[in-house]
Length: 342
Image (cartoon, rainbow, N blue to C red):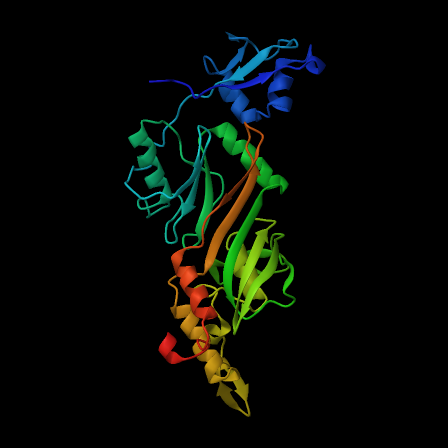
């Protein structure tokens, strides 16, 4: 069995003749301090022209600098057969279209039926040794593009692109009502709900959060919205859209206010908020929410620079069938609020 992944190489240009190898590794190849420490302790971790050297040596123009990472496995993740919708794979990256309802990584009390279990099983069938490293996360009920790194160098570099804001992540959501204006930014700090640690809320004391949105299609009482994340807070899209009165269709945590708002008082008598909507609107809202078993949110597109090849890579995940069905229903004439359409 091979001990190392294929080497990552760098040829020293004339302009860097005489530079310290340490500088080449950190400033030119972008090796993190943590990874550099690991490589220094690895037999063939750092090589100069095929020879193991100290990082304090000086390099010459034309020298070949190579780093080799030891192969790893996710021995703490139970391999489990699972259908994987693979969008792209090479020796560095795996990009999949995650199905709605699938958790990305095992958590306390949920050790199986996750994407990680399926990916580890797939790699083992191929005879490959990789550690599961999801570069980003998607909520359990959110479908779409998800990237997985096959070694710590790749994970570090794509993660740094995300922190720098150069990764383009775009989502599609079906929401109640129509955002006004139909194109804009939601700049609302997000933090935990003090009454429910599982929920998030927009609050002045929260973490800076920015979502850009554009309405693609308008329907009666609903709209299809494209969203671009500039930050990556937990439940960010769901919280932000709910905060402007356009909760995601099917979202059971951040629901339309007809389900959760306390009664209003009018002339000394309680009045349910539902009475503020006409019967057709109420029927339309509940019909749409009952038409899908999860929030209607899909990670449609992911773009970043391949850390080794340097190519700008864009991955797209097709719209899943449940959201397609809702779109077709919304587009059909006469489906606005007829109970028979639920």
